[in-house]
Length: 461
Ligand SMILES: Cc1cc2nc3c(=O)[nH]c(=O)nc-3n(C[C@H](O)[C@H](O)[C@H](O)COP(=O)(O)OP(=O)(O)OC[C@H]3O[C@@H](n4cnc5c(N)ncnc54)[C@H](O)[C@@H]3O)c2cc1C
Ligand SMILES: *[C@@H]1O[C@H](CO)[C@@H](O)[C@H](O)[C@H]1NC(C)=O
Ligand SMILES: *[C@@H]1O[C@H](CO)[C@@H](O)[C@H](O)[C@H]1NC(C)=O
Image (cartoon, rainbow, N blue to C red; front, side, top):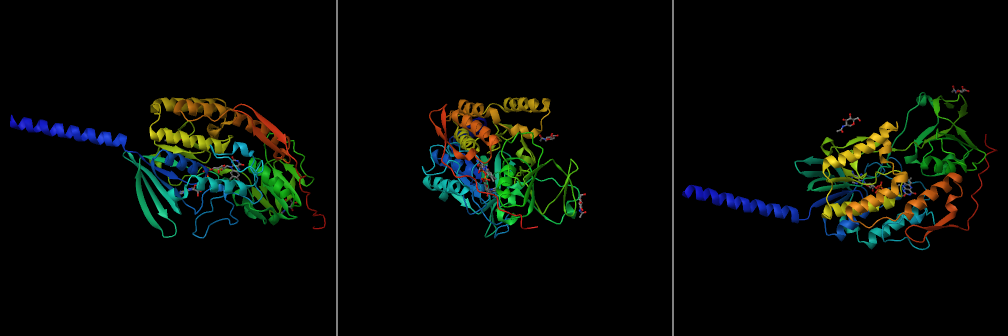
């Protein structure tokens, strides 16, 4: 009898203890690891602070702003770390400033409509100052490994100057490491014979290197189009190889030569798929970037390839491990605005303002997207394409999480900007956009200078 009583007591105590620890678990604030202090990391940190959520924010470099900081160096930095940024000296944003602002933090009034990188970088620094983010970020701390062990994320990171290593445990991981840093580039036959220079746009900095030279640019994405024009002012010829079906109506300069894809290189130049040949001195591959998260392993449950990260719910939540969020994996969107909305959604999730649907439901949702892509014969990379679905996306984030909605006018301005860009790459930045209300905007032609003249290379042979 006594024995039984004792046992009951034990069970009771155990029960109470169990309940207590359970209560502690659900009420104690979860710990969050934020990887990166670019736009995605900064905005996440801002909202986590606001909600009093415990976090550790880790950034490899000494700086905030990620790819928006121009660094004239290429290759490695003074610590032997790869240079992360892909910024080039003459870059101006390809979206108007009104759709590149972070929530509730307007750019200074005198900021140009399409700011040079420097204005935008300063804007991000003042954002970090205004919300007092610097002291919350561990700079020069590089994440080397993120592993899910039992129910916890075990994160290893290294202080770069001292090489001291740390390990910490987290309930949530927010990956904001960016994805415009690891070059993607094809290799063509005969490249080893070629005597000229070859770089990827990740390492493009200034056009002067190419003064009066015969330059080949490969690719017609945003970098390919923009760098082509930047280089064409100074180069002798600008050969542009791409297979885009987009009708670029831009009045290209006389030294601009459009070519189809590369067939092969030889010692002096390039033969294209139409059989034509051009003498070439320098090649710049503007062939995009690869998704690359070297710190993740199979315990993340993600399937990562050069051009896709799957399966994700809302382009963000790792479905196989829903306590991991990968920021900024949307293509054709107001990326900064999307990052900001994702940061607010992630914070609301971690805070417990809403719960995710069951895993099977998220997976079914993802599978539907996947099936559409497969049945239309498109590459898996299109799983990240927002494009005309951008506004629906913002509506869905709000409906599910209760965050303030990104108004439809953002998507409308982006669409108009795209049209202007296709009409004329030289003039689309001569406009300002004024947001009138959540649905409407005004497009204003600004006073502007004519684009500079190409330099004269006729005397050089
Ligand atoms: C040349 C160029 C031009 C662009 N122009 C525009 C534009 O005009 N408009 C626009 O909206 N977008 C533009 N973009 C897109 C741009 O990437 C986004 O605007 C935005 O900067 C993305 O922010 P992010 O935080 O996702 O990534 P990033 O800015 O790349 O920041 C990621 C940060 O994570 C850090 N990091 C990475 N790995 C680790 C690790 N293992 N441990 C610790 N820290 C790590 C990096 O050091 C970096 O600071 C452009 C991109 C490029 C490359
Ligand atoms: C490369 O090919 C072109 C076209 O066939 C030719 O004119 C040129 O001499 C070749 N260069 C070399 C180094 O073989
Ligand atoms: C990853 O993708 C490959 C190829 O699409 C597929 O065969 C594999 O099952 C996927 N793995 C996981 C873990 O989803």
